Length: 279
Image (cartoon, rainbow, N blue to C red):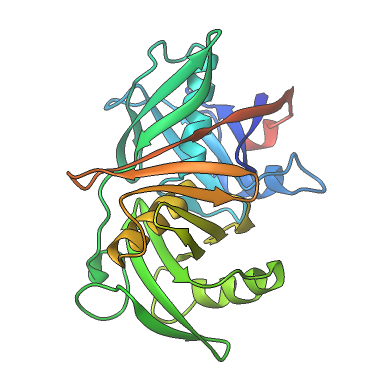
């Protein structure tokens, strides 16, 4: 089967056209393909499937074999893939995900998608819907992880995201505290963790520990959630540039509460792999 390796600011994926829905054992498939030593390597596998409600359906299986509801960087890569491959002909179209219908809009150049803007939906703040233990909202709260106190907010934006407000953290700190917060008893379905530093009223820096993936170079839903939480805390306005290790995302939280994310997607290489044991 043909595959395409793509990334959104370093968050990398293996894209497969499974409109025939022939692939089976998707958890094992993702773990096999995402292995960076014995497979192709990636943070997840993204499948293109048929949809009765949209132009196409996106399924994303994390590198640990779990299925994610949505992925911001992933949907930009998905949108570029279906457009560049001619699966979808329009530059604005709908995509079915487990988090609902998303609508990417592509900026194109020479018949190829260059940047993608996606309406990420509206942030959900109620603890029981995210979910987070307790009642009400979960904004600017205290949490102890491995003996260290953090101030955090948690929202649901496709998937649950916890935004931890910090000064700059080292890579070692992200690797240390990320999994401890991800699996904290407050979060019954675990949580993504976004260590967020406010740079100005319109700029933040984010490092993400992703549920089911570990440390990643970028997270679209996480960057969007960080922008929302910073605005709610009064640290920034509703338009925010998110600085990530390999580039920037622009997040706009519109007055109707919809969050829009704009950023690049790129193909790395293409190839063919024997997936007969997963058919």
